[in-house]
Image 1: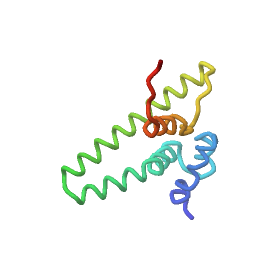
Image 2: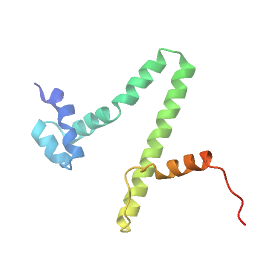
Image 3: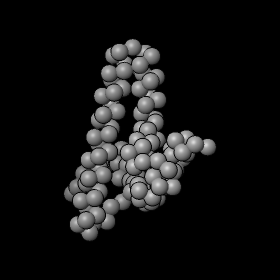
Length: 116
């Protein structure tokens, strides 16, 4: 397997905290090439969605592109907020436990009694 073909497979090491320089050295590629490979892997689903939307016409493509940009901005904002909260020593939960939704569902099903 050539280094260029190997790079996308090795990009997962970046998620594990392996420095970019080490991944570049182990693949024999430059840092820029590894960074580009990481971007391709990271946005592969987005690229596939854009390609599919392009086949449905320019309006559909523009809409998919706008949604992809918004999703990327939201992800960047969430990452920045996570870094800020972590730096401030706050505990950040990774996912919603669903308790809020359950409580709201309970309210919908139970009659509200007047307070006396």
